[in-house]
Amino acid sequence: MKNSTRKLQIIHVDMDAFYASIEQRDNPDLRGKPVVVGGRPNSRGVASTCSYEARKYGIRSAMPLTEARRRCPHAVFLPVDMPKYAKVSSQIHRIFQDYTPIIEPISLDEAFLDVTDSTRLFGSAHIIALEIKERIKKELDLTASVGLAPNKFLAKIASDIQKPDGFVMLTEEEIQDFLDPLPVEKIWGVGPKTAEKLHMLHIKTIRELKALDQVTLRNHFGTAGSQLYYLARGIDNRPVETEREAKSIGRETTFPQDLSDTEVLQTFILDLSADVARKLRKESLKAKTISLKVRFADFRTVSRSKTLDSYTSLDQDIYAQANYLFQELRLSQPVRLIGVSVHNLVPEESQQSLFETANPEKEKLAKTMDTIKERFGENSITLARLLNLYSKEKE
Ligand SMILES: [Mg+2]
Image 1 (cartoon, rainbow, N blue to C red):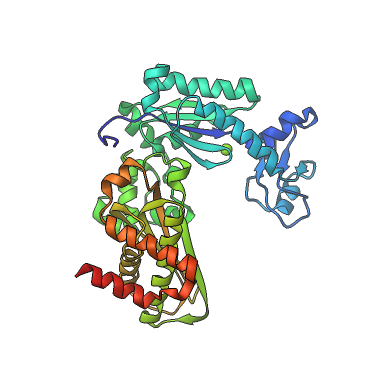
Image 2: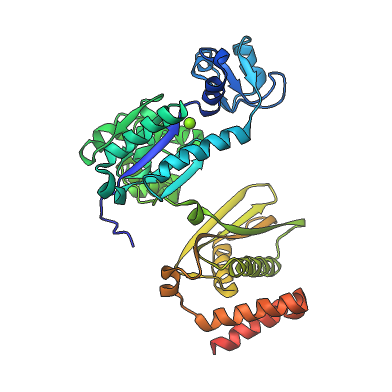
């Protein structure tokens, strides 16, 4: 278990204009030219990545290609060659893996690395970060922007601030001076909507954001308000999650007709929870976080999550949390879709889950029932009977 007071060393690596840079690297004719990767200029697609030459014309990623062409008719438009970019991405990851196993990929061209424990082998985190950057240049002929800081939030801002080919290291003492003058839009998770709301409160910089107390922020932004409060102070406790930890298992169902009967909806939640739990057991995994997703008749979609104290793969644990989240929602209109998912997964046999297993007997029972279902069919044990079994067990 990580000690939360221990000072972490987090690196954020972000490749510069990734797809376009790969194309320019592989085809010298394209170097120095505006290149837009995304597809044919008159297609309905959007730009995935554009070279820095193309950005001078105001072309940005996610811009419709027709608009990109209007801004720069002589730009070179290329299709997205995903297999090629994925291959380069895995080459980059192999470099990362030489320094740490704790890697959280955000996309093909971006990842967080926790190198806190790597410093014993490689010297300082500063050396590791520079070495990674230099190896990407030397071995793959591509440039990356790299940020090094005590947490993910700061590392990400640091990698962005000197793009392209940047390297920014933030020490504990520099954090607040670094953050204060930045526009609130630089905060990860502050999209155009939140930014607009903050502007209406006359808040443009992180320094101004810091003037608001947590209660005020919560009143305006709900739980995200607390997050803003901490991020403005450079506090971010989210761990770097490896791919396995970030994996989730989920099931959802869209109803042929919108539903508003609470009991009927709960039956669906029960059904979905049982499916998810069974999938967990089948993959020999356990989960700690349960999420419920509800889409209303007007297509508004809400997701709520709850993290348990221990890991589970039991139907009733997952259902209990999903149902709790459901009841907390207080339905105000009919429901179109409902989904249950689990996150924060660990292998069943891992130390952590063994140690925290609360219900070994119930787990055995659940597995026995999985076997019965596999042999005698889905309906050999009905949900109602399942529930009865569980409640009897409790007595
Ligand atoms: Mg990038």
